[in-house]
Length: 263
Ligand SMILES: N[C@@H]1[C@@H](O)[C@H](O)[C@@H](COP(=O)(O)O)O[C@@H]1O
Image (cartoon, rainbow, N blue to C red; front, side, top):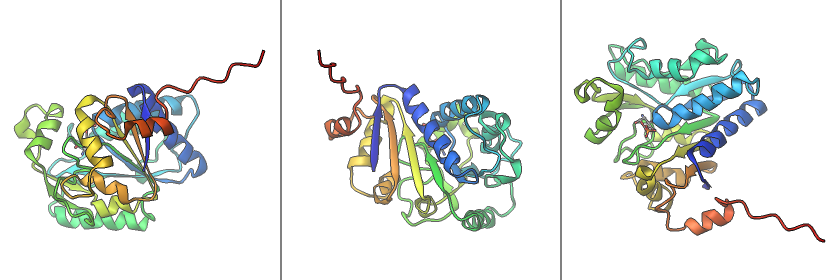
């Protein structure tokens, strides 16, 4: 697990955007795994800026989002479909036919989860997966105690997760109780994973993810088992890491001063 500690949210966000741009430069038809949440909003804004400056094209890319609320149609303003349209898809040259999210408004959500898992496999699995981090250690909507081998399925959201996402809804009671989410096993099949977290509120869960035991009690800790994970943090989110000096040594927060020129 590579841990990059940045001084600010802005540089951490730019770092993740640059990783996506680099991935698409190497592989224009890449399969991207996309995430939602507040953290990702800044990443998508940075990607739109890079697209507008001609630094990246999404025209050949495919995408699969991690999750969607059960019961919300793509037109519902609080759906993750709406989030993706508003935060990214509406502003870049992504082919809508290649952008995938689970449908939350189907009669048989279990069948939809199976269809979505099969579609990801048929696309050759995710090339680059972006992840945010839930305050309770969830990735996607894989809440604590999720099977570490789970595939796309329906999960019941915890009260704390519904509270955390209530800001997108008029009332916490409007937050759906169920979601379709890629499983942890689905996520682990990605060739490469980049997780972004910032802010002091994430510091404890970041430490559990990176330095704690691999446990379903903190689903993100399973990323320790993946061969190619980059965790991008700002200094606040890195604040509870016990091995912080080691990460700073590898990826200094403050760049080492260059040697003075010989006189
Ligand atoms: N389903 C999403 C997760 O994929 C995301 O990682 C999490 C963190 O959100 P934020 O970045 O707002 O803290 O929010 C939601 O629960």
